[in-house]
Image 1: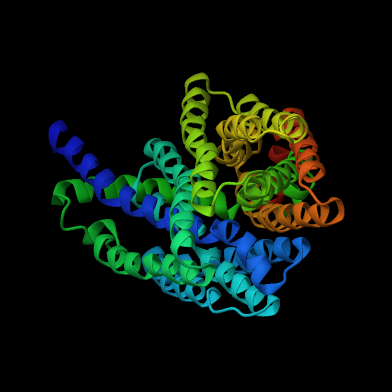
Image 2: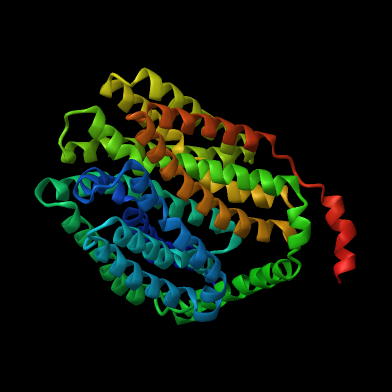
Length: 432
């Protein structure tokens, strides 16, 4: 197979697979955080306290954790294509049903079910990309995929704000659940079951790619077979990574899910303009992720690139919560700068696991920190902000505390050191 044909086959894979994956996760994240735009009117209509609003936003992650862990069994057994299809149909259903909730309990149940249905998607997409892209390509593929997170948050504000200008939160949630069903059709038609089934790839390219992927998967299978959970739990780096991941998510979700309410309370803008204002930090986030991942790869450095952005988010949140309390302009400047740093840490934490831990500890560490860190951060962050708002009547203390958590999280990342690999070397023969 000549070089031009190989390059053409590679371009075809990127153009066929990545746009579908990117927009899929954009829809998923959109449906996860659009409740932030609905909270002001939803709380008024249903009589929700700020604590209840935070609970409704965060209970998503209890369901998410259960199916996130189950996806490690579901995706390999049924295939990423089928698992994601089922998730799309199910989460679209519960996203729309959330719009029919009439009280706090119904709302909480629908959010829990939405998380339960979205949970398998992350693991399934990770599996899918590993089946279509070589190890040397996966960094770019995962980077593009992770850009869908701030992109989903970016779209959520303006679109939800526009819908809320002319309708109510019930209609908004129903309308915004429909794209998941539409994308289920696109997904099923666009993504083949395997490389061998991709008729749009030349036969020679299919054979070449399958052979190279099989060799990589054999190496990965050996690493998976040697996974040492007991040894992993004895490593300080694992617990520091879990702490950092949890604190990062507390800050991210505490900020993201309450930002529209903060802007609405601090200004006289209508909900449509609030949606536009809330998009500015996530536009900056997209630029920030691109800068951070490019710089990290260029300098082959992870710890500073993951820790310093979270440290900056914390400092800016703390300062913004104080200096901008009487000025929407100052708040928006601070929030947009916060957005630039907000999502830099997330894609680099998994890289830290693989850089700082030997292979038999890195694999279970990613599953452990990802599953538990999402629950602790995504659940506690929104509730913490809601509870402090309820106690103080404003968001200054809540965002100041998020800032402190961000600073602590950044310092924790900077404190992480590589595991002592010689320990693993000694123990490995004993497990044979």
